[in-house]
Length: 455
Image (cartoon, rainbow, N blue to C red):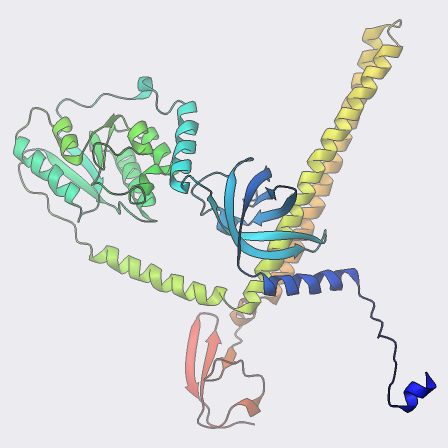
């Protein structure tokens, strides 16, 4: 050893570092999230759970390998189908570590079935669900009025389907009154706007029948009419509803729940006015300028919200809140299992005691045991409620602390965040010079200014 040191070689033992468990798990999680921030994987769903929080939990299996997957409510609400055990799916998300268990998991952002399309699976699932509830039964559907004087039409004012309906009604009877509720018939807002039209006619009244009209299109174009909320509103309408969606070969969920299904919008007009020849006056088309203005305002608001959501502080807060939510879901799941286990043990004990005292007065013994079991059940239920209240209080305190630390909450008290021309946060006067452009972020907007001097 001394000879080697004389030749210039030195030997030092490796530096020893002792990690705290949470620090080690957090370091591993950060490294994994950087390396696997956007991955696609496929496998079979098992142990699927969907608690009241709206988050989804399941295990993705492939042969002897498996990994846990969590899809938070913000992503789960965009799914067009209902996941289930045994379903083959493709998952997109980022690989992370759930620190409370030190367990590898995927935080999923997108989920699609493998093989059959998501739209078709969602259609079949919803159709089976509503059929089981009796919403398709012929007995609950009403007959159309023979000679309606006022007809409600829910469709887009620019749609060709509306022109077809009006032409038929004008030709058959000119004295009929048509009330048009303008609504999008394609896109994300279509289902909500069509549902609002049906609810309007059902609530306000004044019309004797309602026609939902839309021309043909692909399955994606007609997806809005496979919406569960829209189907339930159509089924609950106080006014008979005619579904006139797509071509003769197109079928949607609304077709099944409506009182009458017409093959085309023109056929719907023929059905509703069987003995009338013409419409008395041409119905004026509604201007789309207000609708366009509302869409523009929504687009600008969505863009501003996206910019705020990209800020690192909000991302960290949302990540912390999601972890707490996942923890609450896990505790609730454990509590439910523990309650079932306790009840099962009590049942077995009750059976064993019953077997040993059969030669006594069974009614008196059983009555006493029943009272004891009810008292302990009430005590256990009270303990469970206290535990849930404690967890809820803890979550509320954490939420209040996060709200107090929120940058937006600080800005509401009159403070401002100042950024230089490159978008960097100004923390020291030395970062800017006189004449530099700066932007001050206030609670409700931004102020652009120029530096006159620094102190």
